[in-house]
Length: 405
Image 1: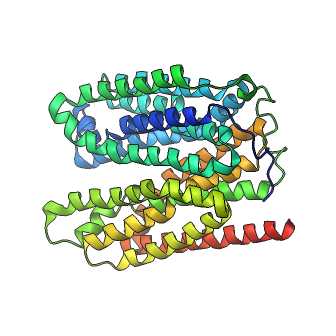
Image 2: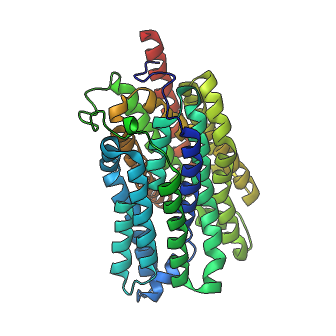
Image 3: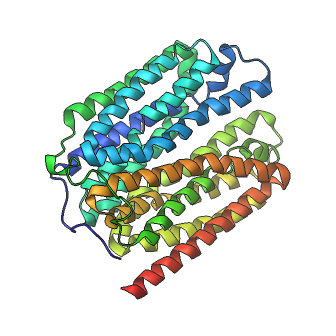
């Protein structure tokens, strides 16, 4: 597979920076996701009445961050190419810390939605950390390093809602937002004081100009953008229907939300456990091999989820699916990194992150539409077939590239 960067070229302090990025990504994701359990309650406190309106505004408030973050990700990636990637992490962590604390001071739903939009515009720490690690790690260990970073991101997504479930009854919702801001501020201090970036890698190589024109194999890069979006669609498609689906599998209504939480956490836990291992495997056997295999296995595991008869079966399948998909994003990032010039890596990685945000928005919409109009079982079957189609497309592209070499 063609590359445009030197195999041994890497940042001298890349391991130190990886540890800081891991810590920063974990803490910022914990702070960003701990609001999930109590967001509808906070929306109600802000004056929204009626269950339908509360659910609608909760969805708008939560999705606003993904929308704004997806729009500006390429911009921040390009700015990182030009002015330095450490600066982008400092900007993101400080902006997120201030905005998260201000959410606890909101008095209207419009203020909350506005602040959620702002935190998306200002934030993106984990995406910036991905770009930094992809650019700095040596080629022979890039997928492993990105897999380790992805484990921190997914662990934050897993731990955040757990903390958000028990903290508000102890200190209150508004103080929980302030605590989240303080947690992100710790990531800001660690980033500012500990990350090292040499001037030659701070973006003085062209500032990301003509990002697409200098890419030797655009087909591969576009395929990775689509694969990243496809992964997020597969992960998020069950979000709108999971509680309703579990209700059909259990006779005890009191256990529905508990089982739903376990189902949602199972895939994340599987990905946490497998991300670095699959990344290490990809460094040895090839990133394309792992991508095709992960998509195929996950697609095959999705189909039987439509025919389970008990909640524990669904939990098991989601855990196995998480294991198979854990190394996918690190491999996607590594392939993009190895096929994009240094001066444009941030901008192109920004487009990849935007594609993933698009998948996070589109996935629930597709899942909710199909589940409501066709049937909930169709969501699992359809998403599984979509992943198998993605595996075939990626396999064909890898095969053609091998023939070309």
